[in-house]
Image (cartoon, rainbow, N blue to C red; front, side, top):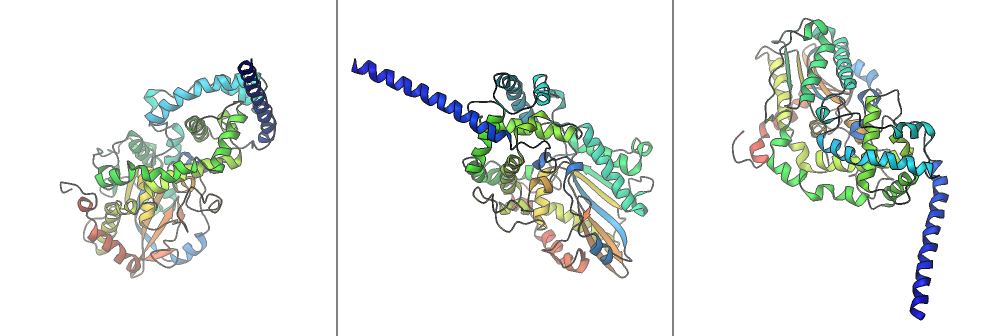
Length: 460
């Protein structure tokens, strides 16, 4: 009898705990629902931020104009990330496996009185079907066409004496990686710069692999081993998932969607990714998936992404910036030949690559270096940081170096997202004098040995 009585008490205790949990969840859900914003922070969606939504620093224009007064642009070297795209095969497979069943369960949850979504969001999720298929993977989206077209127009209008001209393959160099989306980006950029009629007659080059200027990291065994495939690279991100900040987001997102159990990090990331993609693709329409997150939650999720890219591609590992040395050597050699008049110069060098290329080149020239390393436990201290993936590498992110002739001397103007940007670690002012930056670029060029750096068996 004593044993039976003990089992009954144990079962009653479990039932009481279960109902207590339900009551607690309902109570906290009421509070959590108040934190949901109507608007998605479209400029804070990490590397899936659309170019038209991305933050751009316009604060240096006044000083820039003073420093290049009387100067004439001679040549531009431009590196651009591909435009807004469809998901990769990995992301697409993960989202297609997770989201259809989640959308149905979310609707059931709300019909049972749990969750925070309004009727419009529920209607959108109830009829939700993946807006992509296997054939779309990694391809440029239509909004990506518009981004690159707009960037081409922007530079044509900025330097009409260089680019408001008839396209001549001897005067322009174009290159891109073997991925379709970079070739498509090049096409639409040239369409914006030279016009619809001209672009049809432009013969684009054949991409090649390995490309040591635009996709050097893929051909670097040491980087692949020590950074990309090294678990230590992702240690801070994994630790962040255990912090109170991230756990509070997991609880809040789960409760807003009506779940009585916390969703897994993978499920939350799938919801977050779909929210980000749909926001980039359809700027005038809010994605119902975004309604799972408050403004604070988006900050936490952005930092979660930042911890990945910071160590995988930027200042978090010293090898990242070093692997971009061949890219900077290309920049240096083009400008050097133009200044010394050694060879017929192209007026524009236009490269189209990936976010990893952008991150590494920015780190190489010291742009947006944070005051301290991003860590799992300093999110609160770094909420106003400048190094954030949403700012540094949205879709169509671009960095340009422009060679100006100013009387008898030359200057280098740096533009990030089309805005003048000081290279404060390399020179004074917004614009660098060639004599200031030349020694650093020349040293990089002389010491750049990817075979040795990457521990390759064969010479490049």
